[in-house]
Figure 1 (cartoon, rainbow, N blue to C red):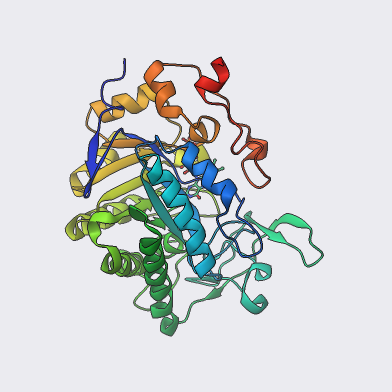
Figure 2: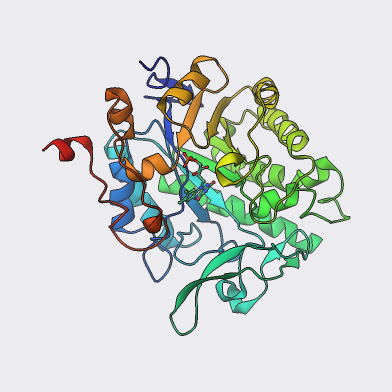
Length: 369
Ligand SMILES: Cc1cc2nc3c(=O)[nH]c(=O)nc-3n(C[C@H](O)[C@H](O)[C@H](O)COP(=O)(O)O)c2cc1C
């Protein structure tokens, strides 16, 4: 019997019906040309509207912020209109949805960049053993090694913050309930935070506070658009993919958690690293996060109903986000309610393709029909 997972709770101004959230999941199925959410994406998100809150797939805030072909953006009118259709479909089914704002930084390739330029990063350090996804000039789609980025000049930093602000304006206009700043998983903001990827000697590098500066500036820009009560942040302390190795991961997450709390940020979403090869988070660190942040605390990574329920019941988290289980189970909440069997996610259809492995996972009523 689940004790807390299926009970309503409050995030910012909204009461959500349950604590089973859908994690952000890149699925690489935006309409082309233009990386625009289309009817297939509308159907996919609407199918999952019974989640307490859906966090959208990571969505690039600019062309510069793109690291994979076929992911959606939020920097053109057509993309904004496409997202508006998604939001309306989720709202029509009484669901709630956040937009994850994404700049990949160095996890990119000149083929994805304006005029074939180099990707940008805090420092000109390549992400070793890391791939991105491109469409070659001859039309062939393939994974390729990321390229050496160029270090952003100090004068360019306000422009990066402006990309976040502009994306927030579009996200708000599209009707999203929350905007989630993606500061996790080895992308631009995380590259600034992490000791190994940020070798700058200016105001954005060196001390922990300096390394956190861009995240807080981007956050303040997003808050200025929609208000802190509708903003969340995703962090992934100890994430070890994409050549990330932060020696101050916990200190910087705790510093940020406190800063977020002071600003009244609605939620802090912790992507646990273990699913991607990192260590388990310690109980001590979880408790420290809880103490540092007064808003809604969400954990994500490898959870099932029982352990997620225990995490919430013991007060460590307010809600839990599920990734792969939501890919395969559009009605995950109902399945948890009935303690029903779950469909198994097929990893070969995670990224790219069409309806198969995307909108064709059956719900319980279809299975029993
Ligand atoms: C196919 C796939 C796509 C993902 N895309 C994103 C993403 O766009 N943004 C993000 O922050 N995390 C992303 N993640 C990480 C998930 O949000 C989540 O942290 C991870 O899958 C662990 O949760 P799970 O064990 O419930 O799947 C992705 C994971 C998978 C498997």
